[in-house]
Amino acid sequence: MRKFSIIHSLSKLSMDRNVRILAGFAVLIISLSLLYKFIPPANSLLTWRDYPCYDDGYPKRNVILINGKKYDLPIFKNPNLPVHLCPKNLNTFNETIVVNSASADYEWEIVLPDSSIVFYWEFPKQKNVSRHYDIKREYLIKKEVLLKNRVKGAKPCVLVYNINLTSVKDTVLHFYYYNISQYKKPESERHANYHLQIELKFKDAEVKV
Image (tube, rainbow, N blue to C red):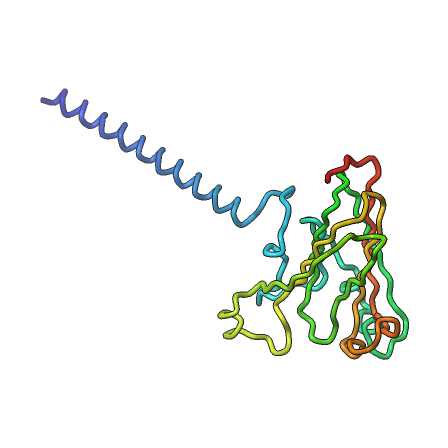
């Protein structure tokens, strides 16, 4: 009887240990799944839904996404920003972002912040650069949530430009940042406070149609 009791106790201990191991393994799998969901791999490409935001859900204005990769918009980190974006400033502030592409893609997606009610982005037609392009405004906050937590005047939006290049060669895309006071003026008479040039470099890249 005593021998049976010892065997039973050992069997129970073994089962308890196996249960603990399985439980620990399950917790590990769940933790890794959550980690992968909320912290994507460093080499993963971002969509407009992944656009970096402030705590209130509005897009960070110093970020641009170019074909799924994040770049800084230096002007919005510049201490002279109020001077550059002053409507009375007649000088256009120019900046260039250089993108070295490992593959010569025809299709490019540019995602820019669009939360300002004072300024707006514009990508003028460049026939020698793009065959065609389309633009969409996407909300980063669901409209039902937005109605409850609206920041007066601001828009929790990004602009998504999908651009098809005319040819795979070194190319410069020009984006302009205008004060809203320029909106009704003819294009030739508008003054941009900011001119962003995205320089695409395809040296030694494999063509992808």
